[in-house]
Image 1 (cartoon, rainbow, N blue to C red):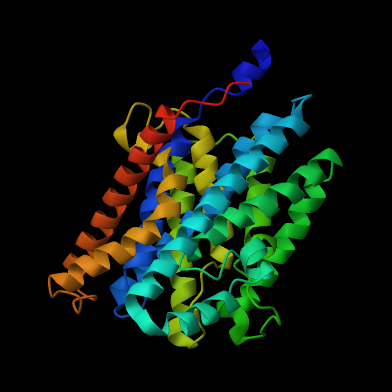
Image 2 (image 1 turned 180 degrees about the vertical axis):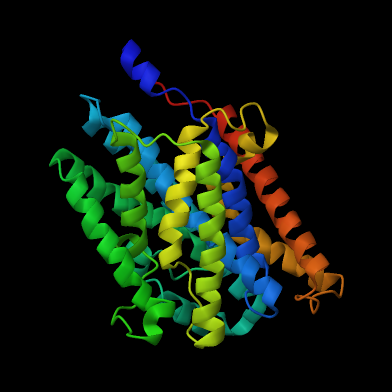
Length: 348
C-alpha cells in the first residue's frame, strides 16, 4: 500500500464507538417489548438507527478499500466470500439449533414438525430474505452480500450517483411495506431486505467514502442534527402507529436524515472512542449480532427456570435481560475468536 493509500485508510475509531451503541440498540429491540407502554415504544423507535448505521458503516469502509484500489476486484471477492462464510456458518448453526429444539419439545412427533420446518427453508428465504430459521437477524448479513454486489457493480460502471438516487427511491417506496402501508400497501412480501433498505444505506456510506470534499461543519451541528431527527423519528413512529393505527415500522423517512447526521459526526470525529473498551466491543458488533438471538432464548429459559418468565414488561427485568444477552453474546464470540485463532491455518 502506498503512502497516499495508507493515509486514506487511517483508522476511524468513531465507527467502532458508534457500533457499540448500535449493537446495544439491536439487543434492546429484540429483548424489550415494542409497544406495551409508551416508554417502551419510544425506546424501540429510537433504536431503529442501528441497522441503517451498520449498513452505512459497511458501505463506507468498503468504499475506502476499493475507490483507488487497482486490485479492487480481488478485494471484493475476498470481502464477499468472508461475509458469505459468516452467513452460511451461522445459518447452519441456527438450523442445527432449531432441530435440537424441535426434538426436545416434540419428541415422538418430531417427523411431522421437521416436515413443517423444512417447508420454510426455501431458496428464496435462505438466499435472499435470510428467513426460515430462528436466526431471523441473519437477514442483515445476506442483505449485505446482495447490497455490496450491486454496489460494486455500479462502482465499476461509475454509476454510484445514479445508484444512490435509485436506491433512495426504493428506500422511500419500502416505507409503504412498513407503517406507510396505512396509505398504500406495496404489494411485496417484505421490505426488510437488500433492495429496500440495505442497498440505499450501503450506497450512502460508500458515497461518503468517495466524496472528495466532504461537508465540514462543527461536530455539534451534526450531533444536534442527529438528536433532532431522533426526536422526529419517534414522533413519526408515534403518529403512524399510535394516532393512525398503522402497523409497526422498522424504519421511517426521518431515519434517512438521522443516519446522515450520525455518519457525518462519525467522519468529523475519527478519534472519538480511541482506546475505549466500548470501541473494542463495537469492533466485534457483527459477531455479537449473529449470536445474540441464541442467547435471547437461553436467557428466556433461565428466567423460566427461575419462575420469572412472566415479568416481560418490567423495566428492570428487561434491562437485566438485555444486559445478560449482550454480555453472554460478547463473551461467547470472544471465546470463539480465541479458539479460531488457535487453529493452525492450512499451509499454502
